[in-house]
Amino acid sequence: MKDDILLEADQRTNLAFSNQMEMLVFYLTDNQMYGINVFKIIEVIECPPTVTKIPNSHSSVKGTIDFRGKAVTTIDISEFLDMPPQDYKNSLSYVIVCEYNNNIQGLLITNPDKLITRSWDDIKSPSGMLSDSGYLTAIAYTDENEMIQILDIEKMLIEILGLDVEISKELINEVKTSSASSNHVLFIDDSKAARVVIQSVLDQLEFTYESFESASEAILSLESRTGMKDEFCMIICDIEMPGMDGFTFTRRLKQNPIYKDTFVLLHSSMSNPTNRIKAEQVGADDFIAKFQPDLLAKKIIDIVGKTKGSG
Image (cartoon, rainbow, N blue to C red; front, side, top):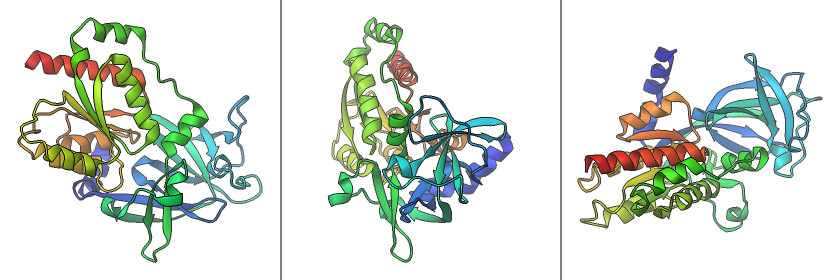
């Protein structure tokens, strides 16, 4: 198993070092093209004939399917986005089995199309009318100049499955009995849902912070601040972002003498082991899965404690 993980990491490490993403292009019931990072995908399968209903679940949750002996919650993305629902009972449909934040979900789609690789420079944040779409996080284009919409799956899952952003009282007491509340954090994430969670955790810990929606903007801002080495006790950075991904941001930051010792925590919904390996390869100090407030709070407290202890 470990050898397989290392092989996968070796095969795709060049993407991390060249600011690129490999994506699966697929269709929903509106016949438009959508994309998802292949690092989130475990497998694409035909929708099985048996989908077991879950009582009192969100309307777009069709139920669970059996995947390698495990019950995987399966969500009709089309229905959630107010499109015609996927007729998986009467027509051939597919499920993208993917891993987000250490949890496995199934995304019901009309059909997969192809794999393509794009530079994050060519993946843009939506603008104009597209920016008003609450679940669209980025756009890209095929070689034929067809638009590929990249959905904010993280935000969708939070709304469908729910998320508690409160951290435990024990952690709040732990940080309040230390001197940690004087620390200043920089965090970067293009997902509004993720920024809300990080901000909530930092507010509860009584940390101060600065945030960016783009790694490109963050790196330009940091590189303009000469002599500001100790401004931040740590930087929390997403991996998937239009313009510049978190791997490229980390590598470039660590090459700067001012920030080479600044603690960088990569924070991503791409929670499979290969991303931890890639994080280490680009110089990140740690890696953590998204949308686990207690885990994030504990990690912040531990990092700040170690930083203070070594100072």
